[in-house]
Length: 114
Image 1 (tube, helix red, strand yellow):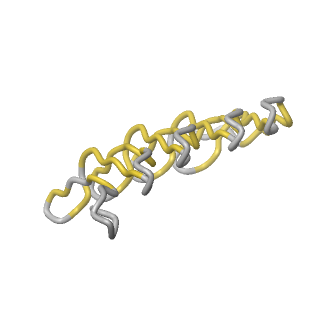
Image 2: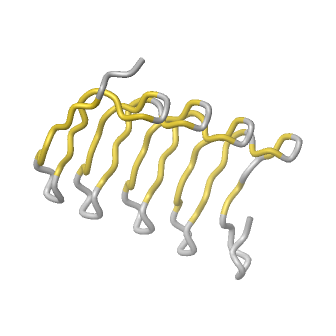
């Protein structure tokens, strides 16, 4: 995949016309945007996203296209925004939310899911 100016936008792999395997994506400025994997066209395994300035945006894992496992997101200040667990696409257990300075703003309890 390429931007209109010919620079690389992304690298994806396909099996029988369906996204499968590792992939990477970039912003127009050349900074990496995301990396992870697909299986049968669905997000799978660990994924990481960055802002166009190179700072982390979010990271976490997928199972069968659903968020599953520990996730974190960051504010544009670089401070942690929130963190917690997903179980089959639903928030589970305690989630912590932080302000743009990195101070704990609130802790929120979600139903524990198996």
